[in-house]
Image 1 (spheres, rainbow, N blue to C red):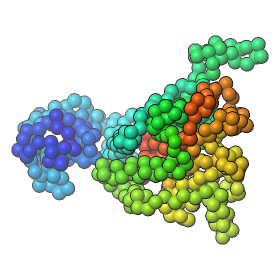
Image 2: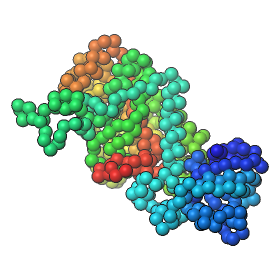
Image 3: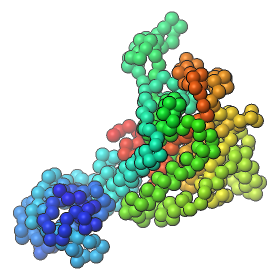
Image 4: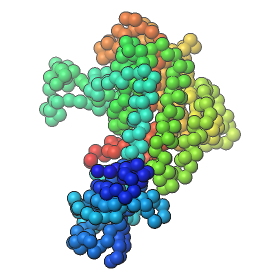
Length: 465
Ligand code: 4AD
Ligand code: MG
């Protein structure tokens, strides 16, 4: 078997060799004398052309080779006379694996809306667009592992079922084996979770950070990379109920080291996309986002601008004074909305920014408190078109302060006693962050909706496939 990606680069086999390709028919055109099949095997956005002399083949077989059908083609690899392709195959054998009846197959030649394709998530990988997106998704996952591996970090796996709420935002999906129609009750009339599988209330994790932290306090530098879950009922183009997050955590790093690492990391990923996914990126750019390639280079060019939350609010207040209209109000203490974040990046600083030192009330209990008693050492990286792509912080390393903060923010000690213990035994300054994998993919693919960068998006009312 030869992969089309290699054949088209002239690497799969020398010209004149007999090669075999297996894939799905994109188009078939031609006449009685010659027909051309554009075949795609998923290895690249590009198709290879199969040149067929109809006289050499069974007519029923040829008639069954329609858009979407799966075939094997064997023949001589020759340099192509046609424009825009390097090599083609002169078919000597054709085998049909599976028909795709034109009366039923929904992906005929004409373009389909992304909304329609979401309704056929089981078939959309067959389109050029989703082939490109899923290949880029793979390359970005590989880039993440490669970056951290090269730096001597260890890949650490946090559990998906957990008894604690890392972000303390109460956005957990419950996991239970209890019969929901007949819930056991305790003497107080509440659900008796001691009768449940784990003998306690559990949920799907919102973040692997707490576990990553305890790993960092043993292995030095670690990262998690896996699915996380949020039952936030926000139907936006940037939120999923199930999304992937990469969370590095590093012992002895302060907030400045953390920003350096995050910036280097995200630039590495973007550079990787440029170096390894350009065919797919160019295709997506042509169809969805003409400025995509420029924007990718643009984030690499300059250092990210680092500002405090207080400075960000000042800039936004100044803008409002000068007539800028925002949907949500701006004042010190407010959580920045996506419109604020995008204004700062796209219109004010015109470079990705890292915002630090947020009011403690709007950030999680684990962030290290500043001397001022009001702010914490959190950091968010804001990107053009995306808004927040990374969120992180230096962690509170002091046992008493952390315990107090957890209490203030109503995070039950019984759920995180093990996490608190790491501050009792050999605690140290440490920092980490979480990259929203699909947000990174939105950025490198130029897609506008997060539902289009994950194979099976989980959003409110959407778990069909
Ligand atoms: O800012 P978040 O909530 O931070 C954490 O979960 C920390 N525990 C990370 C850490 O410090 N280790 O989420 C981190 C990132 C966000 O910046 C965003 O990119 C992405 O995860 N994210 C989402 N992506 C898609 N859908 C959602 N509902 C998301 N919520 C957060
Ligand atoms: Mg955040």
